[in-house]
Image 1 (cartoon, rainbow, N blue to C red):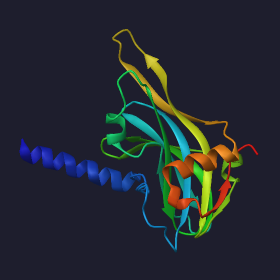
Image 2: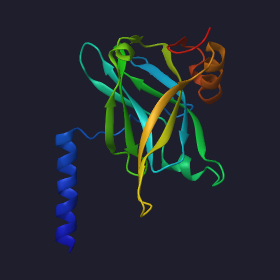
Image 3: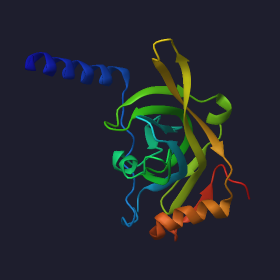
Image 4: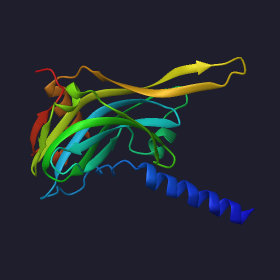
Amino acid sequence: MMRFTHTLAALVAISCLLSGCASPQKVVASGAPISKDRGYVGGLFVQKVVADVTGFTLTNVDTKQEFEIPFVSGVEKFKSVPREQKWVIETIVIDIPPGKYAVTHWFQYQISTNARNIRHEFSAAVKQKTFIVEPGKMMFLGKFAGDQVTLEQNVFQVTKYEQSTHALPISNNEARGVVNKVYPELNSLKFECLNCAP
């Protein structure tokens, strides 16, 4: 039995490597020293409390290197939410190398393992909205919600779900305010918002 378990785990790991399973980028901790050679990308994310959550893939336009920003900082955040509260609202920031980027995909990942299991490509119109990441700069993507949509429910009450994502309104001042509240050390950085009202 143990040999079967190890073999199954190995097959899952190999499958992930071949199919491109990935883990979201580590979230910057509040109070961490400011990086001198990396830029910051973040957003305000509203995520329904479910097993699978959402994230964005940021792709360097020139090198094609990908970085993933999760909508939730980790499983501990979900555990801290009262049962009657169905949504987590969190400001997330990651640091990535300088360059020209686009948000190319949204993905679904398992909150307990951080393993990505579904990925969807955005339209050409979304991917054409590029932005520059540079040291000393905070690039705020906007405010987004990750919802769970019921695809199918049969007579045996077996339900199939899928995540979806959509933008929510936020002003430039509100965006700067939520970042400064969680990451006061980033207040000195140049600030730009990709999807904010003036």
